[in-house]
Image 1: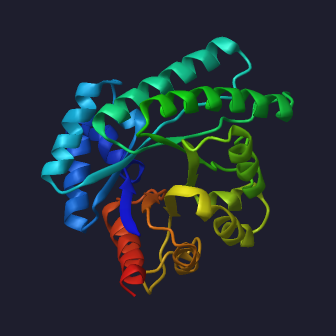
Image 2 (image 1 turned 90 degrees about the vertical axis):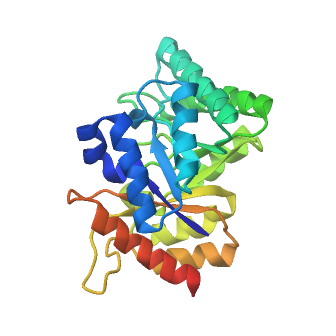
Length: 268
């Protein structure tokens, strides 16, 4: 297992400094922290440009940082077909960019539940869009779509929802971006965090560690991160664990503490 960090953790800094300066400073801070993976949020990258991504990838390479994924912010559950078509086109373009830039994964959402709309219909729309994107990923051959369980408002939100989605799309180019803490927001109880992780980590190619506060011992308090890591280890997971700090404090110290806890576990 390896440690990454999402640019979302440093969102205030990146917005304040702008993408050109903010993202490079984000990378530099990861180097200082001993973190070797950078996950970039789509909205932090600005223009959807191959040249911009190649330039950022080159800078990361000079600093010894790998880009395992770009985190897209798509929504495939729009009822209006015009919106869905635009979303699919954008994701397809990102697949092409990631393929050229040798970025192996793209984090995708399913979509947010729309009010007064049948959930079965919304699931069908999501599945159609994701299947079309999977065809593009298959055509490129070197990019996998990692769909995230994104909490209570997502069309697919529970552990069994995510199993259903992967079964129905049935593509080797669609896997999971597992975020166990998001299962807690689905109101199924805290234990669902760990049950969901155990059920789904065999299907995951990327994972998130959503972190907020820390105790006096320097360990995360919003979930039992060591228990999550044990589940991953027992399942043979060898990918990245990407830290997402969602608190409001300056992120450097919380990210440092999270990375320290994860690294301590990895080293045994």
